[in-house]
Length: 394
Length: 127
Image (cartoon, rainbow over the protein chains, first blue to last red):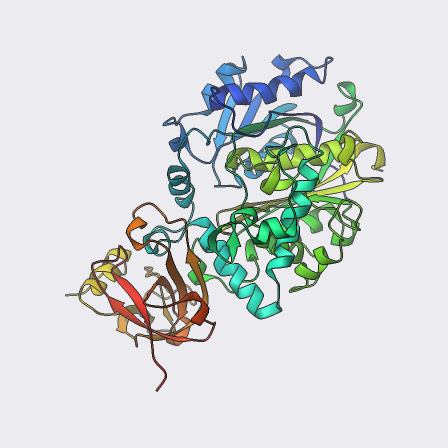
């Protein structure tokens, strides 16, 4: 295992869901307040830079958002950056935050993400999300995001025999996990069974309503510092020991494969190499389950199983909480919710909670090494981070 | 007139019922979307070339919640089609049932201003 690049000393997450009457900046403040209140020895005026992920200003007709979030957190003197990488926006923000710390130029950095979506109609939200796919060949042919992932699902089913029942299991698992996460959009809302998934209405065949992640409001943030400073401010520390980023063509027409995301594979390889670990060392992972098929493909691209065996991996129960590699203990994008710009940092927050033993009823025993996997669009971007709990390092 | 290797040129060819792709004179490969350099060998020695309109389905879906602007199509099938030289295009498949489809089925590219992309597909009946 290689040495830490930066360390997380606190995390904060707003409630995810339909947050009526709250704008993005107010939701972001909720996450920020929770993050700061957890570390009384820390003072907000120590923060010198902020990297905040947000997919689109079109949801609130508001661009130029970095100074807004700073103003609403009382951080006007801070260097602020809004980072956009579609649904991987705050995964990218986290990577930039780690780079800022590792550069030695900053001692304390705020990393966050936010999106406010539920005040718009589903049609308007789908339209804004679709702008993260290719305009000239995909949007113009009526392809929504569910439709793009449906094309991957159809190909995966044909090539490997993956079934709609296996995809449904992803939804069942993630809804069960969300029922143990009070911050999750679907907490206490639904008891999801395979039959319920299979009989839900078709969105883009073979994907049905319960194969799709949620339209949610929400924000997440965390404080990064240098590893040698971390324990001055918190007893709960999680180190980031590797990151990787990969890109591929914006459109599916130029992909080498429809059954794998090359960007994810590149990102994972770089992250594993930098961290000095292998996929088998990962104890808990948050992966980008924007659709159930996306989680199955992620198992394969991240090396948790061989190509084509993702469906069988969940069928054997390996990615459930009591399995060998628990995935999306938070409930994932599917059931925790997917306020797109917040997702990457929300994943990091869940790993922080798991590696510090603070994940409550969904806590995984002996979780030492965690991984997050955040995808932009239909796979033109992917960002992977690898974490180790402070008490296990060295 | 020499057409530039732009998306606008591709669209204009479609409006004139021609399925044009870019060919690299250096490595001989063909590609879409059009770019000003060959994505395989980086040569700038390029030319437009017309290719056959019959391809095979490499994946398919039926969209029940339409994208804005596609409501008039109700639920619609979108196929991803591969042509000669590995050229791929997605598009709406007209007059077909999802239950009749499979990967490998042949389709024909047709041009029409009724579709935002300027084209659609129909099933190519087996001989």
